[in-house]
Amino acid sequence: MNPFPIVKQEWSPGNTREVQAAKIDRQIDVEYDSYRRVYIIDGHEWTIAGNIVKQDGQKYYILECAG
Image (tube, rainbow, N blue to C red; front, side, top):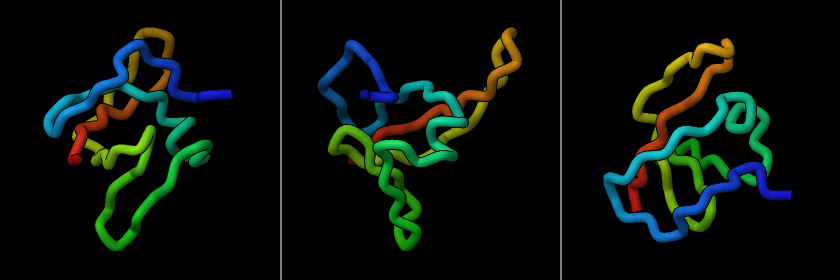
């Protein structure tokens, strides 16, 4: 089961995406490199650029592709 169902498959540095915070916090299909402080998702490195709370009360992280 892919916790990050998304249509876009090609990512470039600087691209962003929203991911539910719970999925990142539980680290399901996510690797975290604590030395470089990046998440590895779908073969790309991501950093947390910010977060938002949507109307339904769920928190989302805004991830930025680092490479």
